[in-house]
Image 1 (spheres, rainbow, N blue to C red):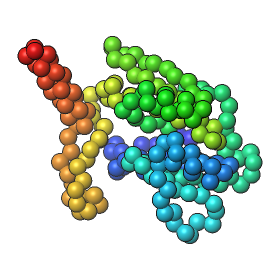
Image 2 (cartoon, rainbow, N blue to C red; image 1 turned 120 degrees about the horizontal axis):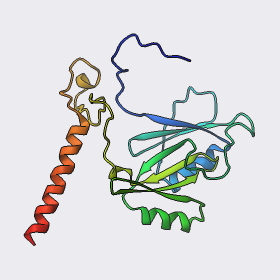
Image 3 (cartoon, rainbow, N blue to C red; image 1 turned 90 degrees about the vertical axis):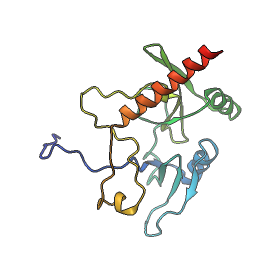
Image 4 (tube, rainbow, N blue to C red; image 1 turned 180 degrees about the horizontal axis):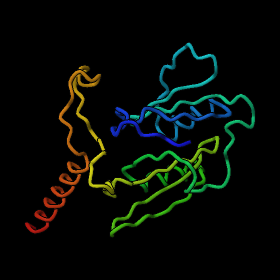
Length: 196
């Protein structure tokens, strides 16, 4: 399918809202996402005519849908870091490894290096074989390849009027702001090292 461009501006998106997974047992998958990843079960609209559950945490929702048959949603196989996956940022990879080992969960690790910066990655499956990655990917700066700055990180919505479009917030390049913060942090670190 080819996408025809009519307007040069992208869709007016705000953020990723949720990901949805078809699963063999909603109950088993809910337990996994609560106990392993720390998601919280939330109210789901009662108008749905099929089994499912909604969970939320870390600013994202996970919607679980009960499979219609035993083959639907079945994905388990070898853990392959190049498979489709959802990734979560973490603050302590050692703790993640320790907890997964305590739970007896199989996982594989990888390290990505770019310009002297290392990113640790850890991959495992949920009960239905969907790939999950845990990483410290924020070690790598987000650098657009084009001169334009299409990346919007924090749009600073504070009021319903701003959120629903009657008033536009002052948007600046999120990458520029992030780079400035990283540079300032590095400067402070260097200055602290010099003072001791």
